[in-house]
Image (cartoon, rainbow, N blue to C red; front, side, top):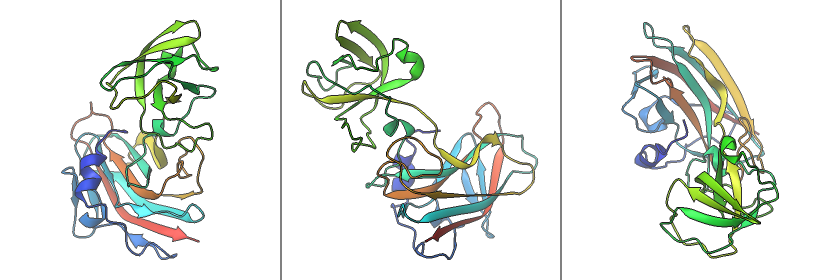
Length: 271
C-alpha cells in the first residue's frame, strides 16, 4: 500500500503538473495523460477507468498545492461487473518539493524519542548506537519503530525519508545498540541527531479499506490545510508542496480476477 511504485509510475509520466487547476471550475481526470502509467489501467473512450490485477495502484499527475485552499475530489466507483468482491483504497498522496510521494513513516515521529548517535555510523553498516532517549520503550518492536537521521526538535526535517526499520535493540546503560533492516546509505558522524518514527496509513479519505461497491457509488472529500506532523487523511502532510489523487484497487492479493471501475473523476480547487 505504501511501496516504491512511484519511481516508475510518476517518473514515467514526466511529472507534468495538472493544468487548469487554479479556480473553482472542476477538472476532469479521464485520459491516460491524467494518470500514472500502469499496465493494470485501461481507460475507455468515454473515460471509465478499469483497474485489474492485484493491488493495482495509480495516481493522478501531481498538482501544486496551496494549503489555504480546499481541494475537492469526487468520483464514482464500483467493482467490475461479474468480478469477485475485493478491497480498495481511494484518497490522495502528499508529495515533497521534488514530487516524491511521502510515506506515512516519513512524518510520524514517536514522542520523546529524540536522541543522538553515540558513535559514528558507517555507510553500508546495519548497526548504530544511540543515546537512550527519554521515551524509550522496551516493547519498541511492537510499536513498528524505525530510526531517522538529522532530526530537528521543531520537526522542520519532516518529511524525513532517512527512515530505516529497526529489527533488534540492546540496551547498555544509557546507550542502545540498534540493528537495522537495511544497510545505511551514507556515513553519519557521532552526535548526529536521531529520532524514532512509527508506521501508519496513507491519505484515504474517499474509501478506506472496504470492499468496492457492487453498484456505481459516488464518493467525495475535501483536503485542506497543512499539518506539522502525522498522517492525516484530509490535511496535507508536513511541508507537502504537491498533491495527487490516488486509487488502489484489488488490494487483497488472495482474491484473483477482481476489478475496479472508476468514472467521473473531478478535481476542484476552492478558494
